[in-house]
Amino acid sequence: MKVFCVIPAWNESKRIGNVVKSVLAVVDQVVVIDDCSDDTTGEIAAKEGATVLCHLVNRDQGAALRTGTKYALQNGAEIIVHFDADGQMRAQDIPLVIQPIIDKEADVVFGSRFLDQKTKMPTFKRYVIMPLAKLVNFIFLHVDLTDPQSGFRAMSRMAAEKIDWQQDGKAHCSEILSLVTKKKLRIKEVPITIIYHNFGQKFSGGIRILKDMILSKLIN
Amino acid sequence: MFQEIIALIIIAFFLFKLFWQKKNQQIQKSEFIFWLIFWIMAALIILLIKQIDLLVAQLGFTGSGIDVAFYLGVALLFYLIFRVRLKMAKLDKQITKLVEKIALNNKN
Image 1 (cartoon, each protein chain N blue to C red):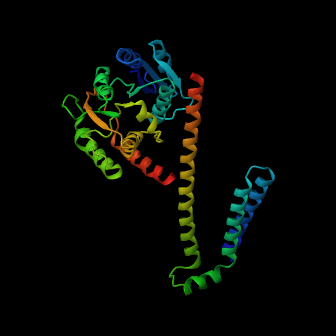
Image 2 (tube, each protein chain N blue to C red):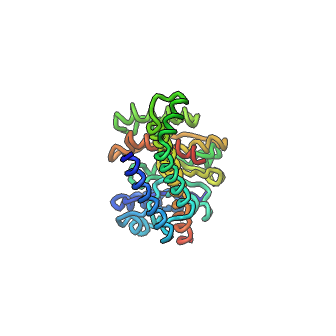
């Protein structure tokens, strides 16, 4: 099966080279969306063998993932993986994440940081922010996953064609989850390991996600 | 009386600016009409403030006519800010659509 990995990137020139190199070893094509970086992210990614698409203006992660996913679909992808450019995700987890799709057990697979104890998450994030995120997703979207904010996911072509998320910012995670549930796609979670270089999304980021979700309900 | 005159002079200045912007095509017709109505209503409130005071008292408000006009003005402002935020969010979406299309077209 043709596996594309979509990596949205913004100012990741220090890490993108290694990320592309490691991911290319386990997928057929790497698509990097340079979200109007100020540095040489795009050039380095292209040099390492990625197909690079460029946003003329920064539109945030959700928009970059949508651009990359559309490109993957246009170019014959059968499985599409969403992966971060900051080096926190491990390329060796990709085969684990796509296997249930290959085995036809699931349409969308989410990597979960909580199914095993290998991920060393900052304490405040693990015991305060993440439980709050789970609660918000349960109340607003009626989804109950161990890691609803996981950005490490894989979807079959059929699933990618059905899910058309609109959120440009970080709220795209929750929106994708909501759409997957609404479209009655088969979901599976597999354990992944995240390497934290920094805290990642803060509590204020969560508030922004909530604001975006409410605003999108008003617009739509 | 003196405050009313000052307020009317200020409104006249804004009306003059509005017509000048319309003449120089710096403002769209719909915007011009909106602000024209707004400033005319503001002038009418000032000219008829005593009658408004009586009306407001008959309706059971304890405040004066100008207080009620102020509260209504604030409520209207909040509504307009809400509409502007919605418009900005829609524009944001449209920008993303364009950026996405350009990125895909450039690659394909």
